[in-house]
Image (cartoon, rainbow, N blue to C red; front, side, top):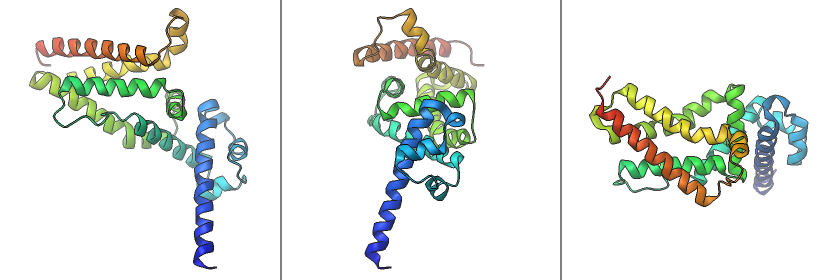
Length: 220
């Protein structure tokens, strides 16, 4: 087999792998890991059913690859720091962190798949969750803790920093996990770009006020 033929085969295999991950992320986002079938994924990918075992080993490993890829795609479009300069203030960093988070959860394109898959992970955690926490969530957690520490200074204990961080994240995730209820209670909400900006300002202001107030109290 000449080098040209080998290169062509490698390119074809790489294309099949990408198509499998793309199709898998769609199916897993729609129906979850348990209900998803390898047959359905391969049909959407236009691949032989044996391709999953060849490229990934089994459905679980394909799921892990798809979950990792959806996170990568989402964070590439809406990075947590949005390219802020190193001299950005804590207030600016917090707002950008919240804004990018909201954009990721409200996205309607392929970037939305990671949110749907992660919502299912909260109900039925898989072995892939440990990898995602280590590779994707922990770095974002560290970034948020750094922001809060900068805002509160030495007046905030490690415990208070952690609690403030979870409170910030909770305000954002509420709109993802409870959106069906929110849209029924407040049917006029559209969560378009303008409303996302307003929501970003609100969560940022609310969080800054809370962090400042907590920092005034006795360190515990």
